[in-house]
Image 1: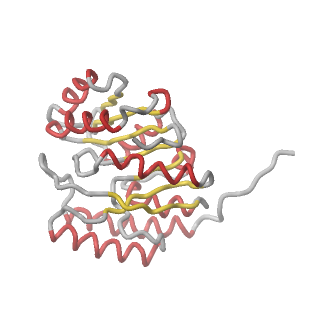
Image 2: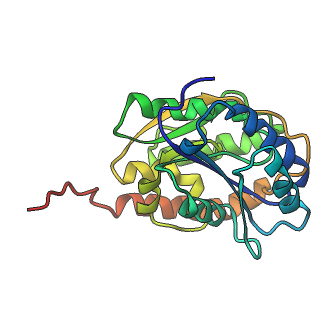
Length: 244
């Protein structure tokens, strides 16, 4: 197992993932088995599931005793769920991944490695090497990513990949809005931080259904994209300071 260079909190937002919950926790426990528990934590935020996701997660404390499960009273969306988990996190580096088993927990160390080499790094973004999705989803992402790169100039080919690792204080400095998780890269650049892009694996969804449709993403995404572009331009940069 690779050494983890920093203490980190793994934050995972889930909704209606009862069939995926136990296998995912077990894979995470195996991946982190050699990591000092004092230098890591795992937080699941259930965003108003209508199935047995919460019960399936809490039952896995026999596998991962320090597992933390936070439940929303109703569905608020992925960005709010991530916000809940990051606010509750104890460590200075936050790692996010999806809860549908399409992300491989072994990539946690791929996300953390750049922080050991660059102490000034603000955010690491995963970019899927090969999308294990339908043709329509891949095409929709290709079009959306092309438009996003043109407007935001963030240099990423896959901004919606669930894998992100960032400084907690960077996240707390970002302006919050619904669906902001799709713009973490551009928002980190806005705050004046360096970013790193790393390749990660993608796996096919086996259980459950995606919470997003191509039309649904397009309908809200276009407004969010122009809003994020406006935010990026309405900021004069992170000030350098010294106390006298």
